[in-house]
Length: 531
Image 1 (tube, rainbow, N blue to C red):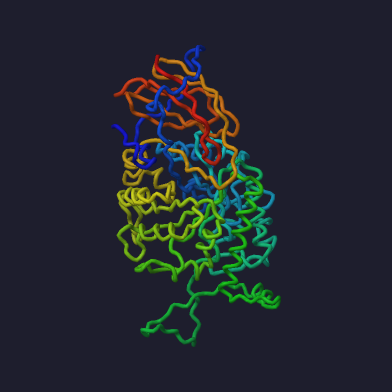
Image 2 (image 1 turned 45 degrees about the horizontal axis):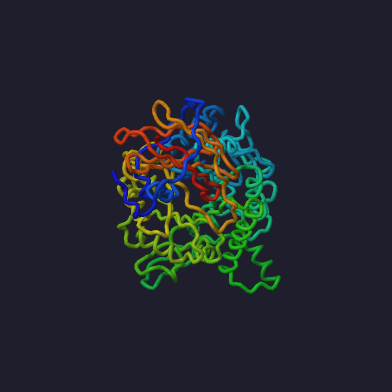
């Protein structure tokens, strides 16, 4: 297929061809060449954020059940990463803090029970799961984003007692019961401090690419228990109005008022969350400027700003999440609204909601909507998607130049290949590798120029690559019969082969560049030209 280079860059991902790992076949090498004409200049690198969430809570994605031996946990992690590579994804968003606990050794919070079946109990034999995930992801050219639940402390369905160093035991005043949940009170300074301490501890200790938080701020409302003799409130049509259990933050609210606070209670709650978001964004970048901060809020915005026809739950009024403000202030590097509804569902239409969030993004932060891929094959009464819904949602996202990626919830649907979704994505939507979009608003000196030698081998052009400064990936173009093929290689590997094409034959020109942590591409090196 002859590519139309005027199309959006991601369409280059439809080009076939990949790099095959091999030994270098000869000690002989060529020096880098120079472009001979305009036709020798490769097109821009194709870019799109293609990611999937990996949930540890309730063993949704990993590990498949608690108590597995360390070797089996690692094998399951590798299988997930290999599946991501086979689908041409480029990032994994791994849940590292499900409920004020940890999937890694922490001095602040206990081991999660989802690893071993008992909170506070380490894996056996002992290893560091987060360090393992980071190392194995980077070895495959995948980004690894650490996903934190900011306020959930515990659910009544927990299988083991809270560990002695769990926040419910160490700082019980910072935690409130809400229905079946124990919830870290956003108004309690000790709760927010613990969340910040946990996040910054991970940023300092691990080579992660992003910090990611989900949609749990104040808890989703639950129905208040009925009390005998209470009159049922009615709406304007005379229908009963469901009562909601209010979050029990009275002590902090009373302290706020006693200190001269002037905000109403809803605005005060939103301010509590806003202060954490701002502190997290600035704190992460003080530690490591290249670690991107992402938030994945509920997918509908403020009721007073919604497009006509959009109705439903208000996170602004119920979760006290002022997501529009976070975009306005630039307190995120990427924004992943959970657009978990079908295209044709008018009251929560996927494209209408996506356009809304794009319109609320004055700082031009990355807009990478969340897709409910796990609805494919879901059991009733959950709405059941066909794979076409996800394929079409990706196509609609790509039709909007200001939305440059997406995230699947969750990896389980792709690993299980529900109704053939993974096969369809690989065949029609993810046919080639792509780089993550660059993040120019974060400081970066850019990568150095790689040292490249090349030699014609048995099955292709064999490359020896040596990374320059700050390199995380190599971007590699190969021209076959006038068509450019694009591939990505991790900077940790040095021996690669650009394979011959089954239809077009051997590459006549190979060009290589380095890419840094923020997606910035360096100078291109003309590594090989057919004699």
